Length: 467
Image 1 (tube, rainbow, N blue to C red):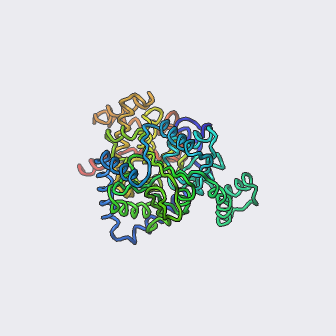
Image 2 (image 1 turned 90 degrees about the vertical axis):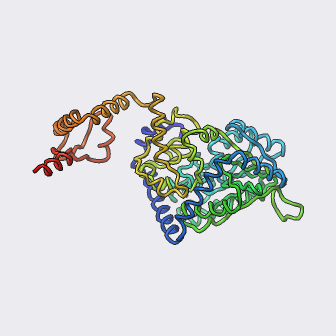
Image 3 (image 1 turned 120 degrees about the horizontal axis):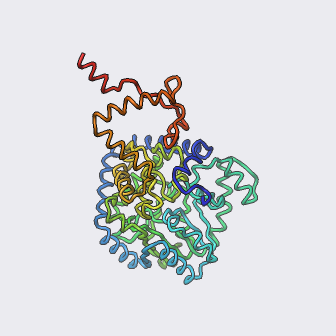
């Protein structure tokens, strides 16, 4: 990814029309079909969305109290809690836990926050062996790639590509059969699980009333990561908290249906402290690392609601921009509409000012969001922030200023329409504009634009009413 252009537009130009982008489009279409089917058979889905929205907003309003209670309950259950201000501190905490417990071999289940803080390269550079065990993340790690989707890391890859990768990296016979590919990965990972000293997981939800950690998967790898090794380290973004088990249950229902259309994910794993003396399995130590890394800044801003996200991926699947460029086009861990808000919120507008513009503002993301997060309005707020900070290119800022002056003056607007029609005649053929020079060329790279009509609709209506 480091070799890709640094701007969203640069990355998008390289990705649009590629086999990877086509694979993403096929994948998100399937996700959308599953979501629609799962929601249609769930009569109370809309009421549950309202309930989960209220739950998540309540959690954000009471975050300090809930985190304190959660930490107290984790400790009471025998676990240990660590608070990290930023990525560096979080990585240092994890590395120190591994050193203190003599853990060198680490297995990981899927964790977006670990991607966010770049934990893997940090640990590997310090001599730890780190293996991803989620199938998609395992493939990404083998390919030295990065995930392209919140819930489907290798949405951009085909089975044939994965088969070639396994043959090259694992020394197995090449195949494009998904069942055989799954079995190859299981066979390879089984021994790694059994030899691991520590397991690192993400946290879908932290339940304050009991200090419990909830993870959901469709593969079961999180259960092995959190029970087979003697040390379990859970990485939790500080917003991933709910007050009660009733809140967790409601959230998990809409999470699964919005992500894949399932009633519930195949595995819902709950960890409440380390193993007791009469437990048949489980870790000897449980550490929860609660990570801020910019979330406090978001919480105190006008985009605080984005922290209510439950990471279902529905907004990515429905977004027309994401479907064309895929997750890699965004150049960051969090992609799609939610990522276009989260990333500038966590890391600032520089260099992420473009991401709020990676949207048509069609509103589909808000329509499908199980928490009804008002993503389009937050994208507009971030666009305002980008403009006020002087992030926009000069040609765009001047162009929008002139457009505003013209569009708010009826005389200038009428004159501009006439000139636009005349000028379009110089670059059109057969009623279509096939190529536009300058910044407008992006509009005609993949499509032809119809030449503006000689008479606008409003003029036609005025003439008709006056006739």
